[in-house]
Length: 389
Image 1: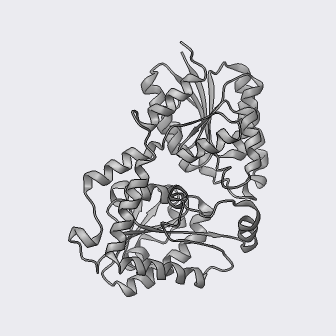
Image 2 (image 1 turned 30 degrees about the vertical axis):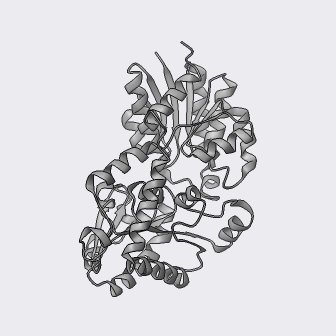
Image 3 (image 1 turned 90 degrees about the horizontal axis):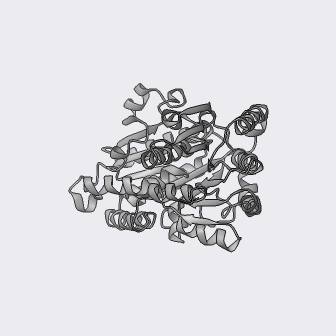
């Protein structure tokens, strides 16, 4: 019997970790999975130690404030590693905590397969030294990451993104096309509002999205709005009554079928804009950082990529309009006007929307490895580091 330990620290990592765990059990029905993560991983794990992913410990200050909790959890894991034999440890993204988990594993001579590469190629590249020291194999979602790690002497394989195939198929089955070619009324576009998945993101971005929507609807009175919400954070969003009065439908969960029908998504940077790309949904990407000085610091010293959205990183150009800013007030009128301007510009140009959709679908296809599904590729890579039969 194989015994594996999986760790995820945020909602997107929790989802990807749960997909990998299900595939592991599919290929090895007797595999025993221990985990820390979120509700998705809790459903599949044989032994679930703690919900780390739902706490929203992101950014610079929140993990510091909750440091005693993280130290206690690390001690719990160290005790588990001392009491049980594990064939592999699989950290999923969430570098700050998971690199210490990898360190614990290596001290016990447990192989480490890091799933979902930390974005060290985008910022703080010095972390690659720690990955080289404590990780046996990195399972990369994106092809360019493999080249990066090989240049730095780190073992890495391209597994592909586990959502790419599923979401691309959703788009294909629905045969959804932009207004220019599907007969929909261009004056009644379907606009998705995606403020992000973390509590601090939702709080920062909702006031801006509310203003953006009101101005877009003034331009397109027949427009339909859809606010995609985390089902467990309902109190962070406007009430259902106020949303309905504004012409916005509240939709809980990822709701990929509904998202595939969008004419345009106004999406926070992160997993959501990657999912939009896989669904072939044209979008405008935004991200506001509070306080403003932290944004200036990140852009000046930490972030090494030209773009913040994964579609643009994969394309090597600003295929999708990006708007990032340091937040100094609740209104952020300048950022709002940028978002409104670029959104309306796209909505007025159905031919451009159709071209953007096709480009996004082409990018999505690059995230599926040849000959196997991404989850099969990732699972096989995990088994290879400890299974030599």
